[in-house]
Length: 609
Ligand code: F6R
Image 1 (cartoon, rainbow, N blue to C red):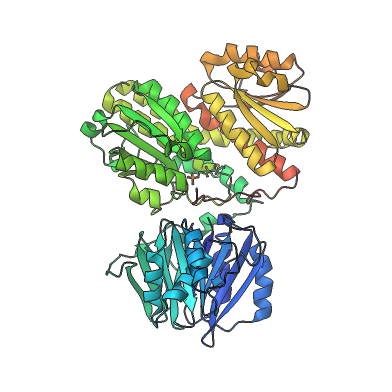
Image 2: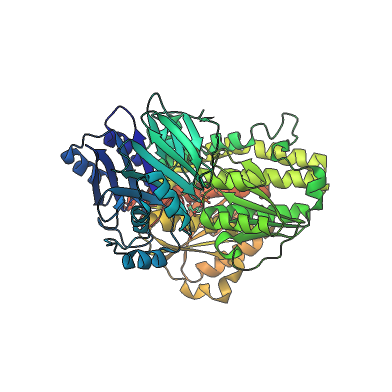
C-alpha cells in the first residue's frame, strides 16, 4: 500500500515526480522520498510526514536531474520514520529502490545478505531489494534486478535508479499495480493512471512479471524472467477534472454529490428504454448461468457491505444460496467451492489483497469468477473470468461513498439478470424493478437538496456524543453497518451497528443518554418490529435519530431527530438510506476538525494482507 512514480525526459524530474506523487497520496501518507541521478550519482532525499514536508527539502536541495523516482509510504514493516521511508539505498549508495507491496521472505533474505557483509539501515522489507540488486550487480543492472527478483517471494511494484545505469530507470511488477506512461520524448511510471494524467494519456498497463526500462530514448518492455513481451498502449479517455475537487471542500463531499450521476452511469446501456436489462457484456451465457447452484459474494470493508445487500437481494429473488463473505476470512476457511459455484468479488480499487487472494483461490478450486469492480485495468478486473464495471469514476477520498452506491446498483442489475435467466422473476416484475431503479438518481438528488442543511444541523448537535449505535433489520441493518463504518473512519467516533432484534441479547446494556442511536427504518415488512426495538431504547433514555421514509408517522412518533428519504421499493432503499448517513459522517467529521479525505491510519487501496 504505497505509491510510486518515475520520470525520464528533458525536464527536471523532481518537480514532476512530486506532482505525480501528490495524486497518489491517498495510497499512503506517513513518509515520502525521492531519488534522482545527478552527475552520474544517486541522490536520495526523504522525510517523515506528508509530501509537502518532502517538497521543502527537495526545493532546498536544488537537484539538477532528469531521471528520478519517488514514493509515498503507508507503513507495513517498520514504523513511519525518515530511515524507513523509501527510496532505500544499497551499502554503497549506488542503487536506490522504491517499492509497493510486501517481500514475504525478507527476514531470510536479510539474514543471508547480512552474512554476506551487507549493512542494513532500516526495519523495512524493501531494503533487502537494494542489497539483493547490489549483490547480483556484475556490470549489468537489468540482469542484477532479474536475478534479485527471482529470490523474492511476495508482491512488488518497484522502480530502481542506479549509478550503474545513469541512462534511465528500471521498473517491474508482481501482484502490485504499476503503469508506464508514454509522452513526447518523456516517459513515466506510477502506481495508477490518475497520477500520470496531466502528463500523458498513453499508458502501458504492466502485467505481473513485466519489467520496463525507461530511458530518454523510449520504453523497452520485457519479462522479469528475461523473455520478450509486447503490450499495446491503452489510451485513457477519462478526464483529470473528474479526479479533482471541483469546488468542494473535500473529495468526500464532492463524491457524495456525484452519486446521482454515477448511478446513471452504472445503469447506462444496461437498462433499456423499454425497461429491459442488457448485461451481455459479462460474457456469461444463459446456459452457463443456469449451471450455478451456489453463489459467494466476496469483498472487504464497504464493498463487503454492498455484497451483503447483494446477498439479501439475490437470495430472495433467485432462491439459491448466496453467501456474502469477507475476503480476509474467505481465503483461510476452506469454503465449499466447485465448478457449479459463481464467486462474485466486489472491489472499488480492484487491488485489495484479500479480495484478490480469494479470487485466485476460487479460480484454482474450479469456480467461475466475476468481478464487480471500478478501476479499469486493475488486477482483479484482469484476473477475473468475467467483469462488470461499476463506472463510479476515480474515487479519491479514502472513505468510499460513490463506489458503494454503484456497487449496489451493479449487484442489483446482476441479480435481476440472473433472475431473468433463471425465470424466478417474470418480465413484468423485472420491468417494474427497472423502472424503480431509474428513479433513484433523481430521488438521491432530491434528498440531498432537501435535507443536507438539516443534516448539517443534526451533525453539529450530535457529533460530541461519545458513541453512536446504528440499528436496523434486514437490509437496514446493512445500511447501519455502512453508516457506522463511515462515522468511525472519518470522524473517529465509536460507532457500531446492531441487528435490532439482537439488542436484547446484550447491547441494550450499553444504552444510556450518552449514546446516539441512529435507527434505519425503511423495510416495510419489518417496520412494526423495529418500532418496538426503538421503544426499548427510548425507555433507557437513548437518543433516537430516525432515518425513515417521508411521511412515516409511526417512525416520527418515536424520533428525537428525524431525517426523511424519498420512497422507492424496499429492495432499493439501501441506495437512498445510506446518503444521509454519509452526509452525517462527513459533517460530524468537519465539525470536529478531522482531516476527512485521508483519515489517520487508513489508506485507499489495501494491497497488503
Ligand atoms: C471504507 C472503505 C474500505 C474499502 C475496502 C475495500 O470506506 O473504503 O472499507 O471498501 O478497503 O476496498 P476495495 O473496494 O478497493 O476492494
